[in-house]
Amino acid sequence: MNLRVLGIDPGLTRCGIGIVEVRPNREATLVHFGVIRSSPDSPVEKRLVTIAQGIDAILDEYLPHAVAVERVFAQHNLRSVMGTAQVSGIALAAAARRDLRVGHHTPSEVKAAITGYGAADKQQVAFMVARVLRLASPPTPADAADALALALCHAWRRGSSLSGSGSPASTPAQRAWLEAEKSARRGR
Image 1 (cartoon, helix red, strand yellow):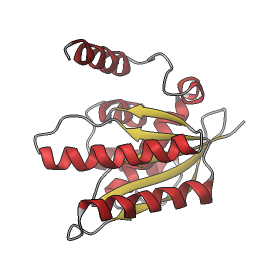
Image 2 (cartoon, rainbow, N blue to C red):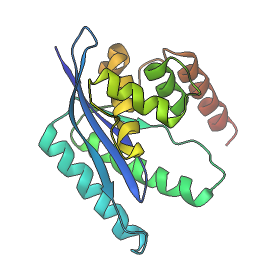
Image 3 (cartoon, rainbow, N blue to C red):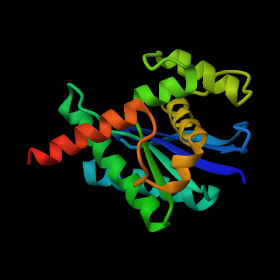
């Protein structure tokens, strides 16, 4: 059975989205990609509604089997991480309302899955996404390419993508992240 995955690179100004369909032999086909934008001049609650409506429309139109969201990680810019976390929550809620499986993937995990190197730069990721999907050039903007990379990473982990977010971690990066989350919960 083919697996259709929506990848979401959460951002408050630009939320990257990318949908791929992957066959059991790991061959991938591009379905759709783009960016949902919100105006930095609008109040945050209106920006979140704009992003939510965009995600809902994509889910309703393309009917993915699963959703992959970039795992929010601490950044130096607290304002940026807050917007990313808020959009991530919107994406998770939209998927849950449709009873879709959700996967969370760290940036280094996605880079390793796509390029074979967990510290690859954005250009390398975009180039490999284009190559895997047999595109003439890398998808732009970078947020869309990142979303496609998330979708590919998730689909290629077919076992974890079909078993939901409660599945055991299968990579060292996933295991380390889960251990850090457990430690943080114990420290509360």
